[in-house]
Length: 248
Ligand code: NAP
Image (cartoon, rainbow, N blue to C red; front, side):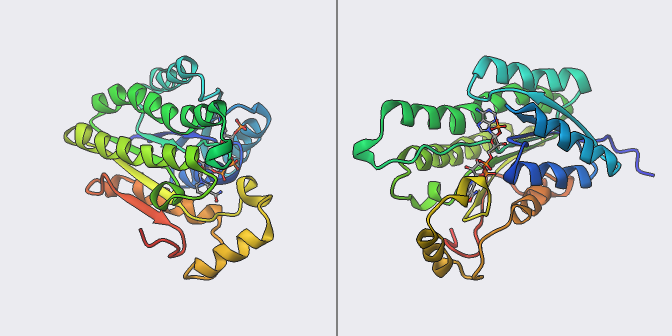
């Protein structure tokens, strides 16, 4: 039996899609997963599912766009468990529009939810991670933030911003045993993409080297490795999990 501590992992946007798959995977990896999102029902169900398979989970209902509430929720995790080891900033939204039609509100809400929230979480998590001399920060960006995407100026800017934030965190906190990396999904089948026209999906398939759309488990597998103890020499990286669409 190992006497290594159970790693405490926060996963935002755990109520569905990619975040839910990441939470299930990290629980399977032996982490205590703290699930965060705005809707309580799915979080409570996921906690029960993880516990019924012998894993450990708890949840906090929080709006990550509310910086004060979100920062406090992260601090509370560290207080409750006496540590915080893994932070996966996954929750995100889209408010797509062409630049000429994009409102200030569409711009600001996507920057707040997809980029500012990650800064708020990292700032709150840094102290407990430094205290534990261990941390794994994983920011879920998008290939849109690497290569751009028409109709997504707000989303692509926020996701590109996550890359700069992550590389800076990697440099600032690396000496404390904390790594920070970006996992950038390509085209993954979730609620976020299910209503896109078939034509867009067909066009994407043409550009994907492995000739299939991604699954939420494809992203969870990458996050599992990046957040593991053995990934301590991997930091400041952007890992595009996109079936070879961008080869970024
Ligand atoms: P999704 O199915 O739409 O799920 C989004 C998650 O974020 C939900 O759990 C949602 O929970 C949570 N969320 C949204 N706004 C929130 C807020 N203000 N406060 C707290 N939680 C909030 O999205 P997904 O496809 O799984 O995407 C997950 C991440 O991967 C996002 O960052 C997305 O940009 C990125 N990504 C996805 C794809 C793709 O193809 N699907 C591609 C590239 C990148 P509640 O609604 O319950 O709060």
